[in-house]
Length: 326
Length: 289
Image (cartoon, rainbow over all chains, first blue to last red; front, side, top):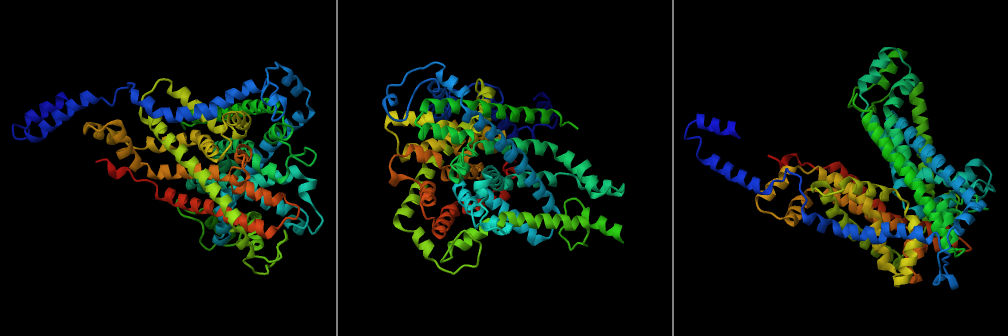
């Protein structure tokens, strides 16, 4: 400020007239508004209130309410639909002896890790790598259909894959066995494939963007040193993609975990509970067997699991940011 | 000769795409055949659906169609259209409620100083990762007690489930608005609402559009919430209606395929619109002098 005044003084009276008056008044206005200084404006809370109210009553509130409901004998219909009461740990005791729950937990892990973390990420990665240097028509069809598959609503995807994987469908046709009913024989494999099919487009766009950020001279230098393309993939491309691979795998796990519709519509959890992942089992317990209290407890287990996944996600993105300064 | 061709094909100069006519090498064959297999993997199920929707005797087999438009005619009958209308109502309510609340909240998180900002943002992040199927039991109990098992509350709920992600999405866009613009507006005695609606809103239109699209798609595709939370069969949206077709004893593949396409079409259109928005990006550089 001082230097500005002294400068204009040096330049003489002519330069110190018009513009300087203007800058003085604006400085005073600045002193009154002070946007650069941290302060709490009550209007912030007014603006936050709609989101806070909605999230509080329809999201966070129900999550907390479910914790309580998980320890009651609430039923969908019948006498305990209205006159339900706190039953302490009896739901937990039932949970710990529920063989279907353990199976469901295991299937959830298989589905989330196998289909989400591994299959989808791998499919997206291979797709992005293969599309890098292939001819234009194939690249166009592959990327457009992968993204289209990601755009389709889950109900449509469930219908598509049901038709594809049952008797005389596309898979049976390709296998040359019209009676092959893959959905019935290997239900988990089919729903996992359908899930990967529907998410790979997103993974592909993530990897394509990351591949574009790898400097071309790195690979060029490797080629000058006589590295084969397998070597440059293993020593340059994959290490450079590592942060994206971790982020993508975790994001796909989160998205797969929430995928109730696909499995419920394709198999309903069957055959014989073979695809009964936790979201589906929760729905069954609540709205088919009418045990809302027990379903709420199963929902609480899911909240814990998603908190674990979310924690992993935050931790991974933090450690990536710290390890990045090079 | 062999080595030079390898160098030329697999190391294009940075910033230039490698889609010039290539010499055939092992790499080229591998990546092209892998891409071809994957393209077939993604395209064939969709191709079947498109063909089945116009095939008079449609089955789940992939075959040349006996062309007809009768399935589409069935798909646009009154009750099927009504289900699509219900979907539209639910998704519109969800989009408006979610995007509006998320936008002003995102503005506060981005530009204002509030106590406990980081814990609050972490809570929002946590909520955006929670699978919403955990909400069905407590929300069902709440709605049943209040007598809200109908279409509008379900729409509002679906809007709320999108808010956490929308807050993050919009905050990123609002973060990119230079603080100088806001300061300039404040110097002109603009109040917070004027800054929000006259300065921030016009500059974050692409962000608002993609956030609204997210909210719409999120509600449009949801199956579980309507099926549990809407009592009346006539008020059920299209995915539940579609599931009704699939569950019937004799599956009519042609009609389901046609209805699936009609039901999925708005999402595809919205998605194409969104990718154009992304490409346009936003050029705030010119706004600051």
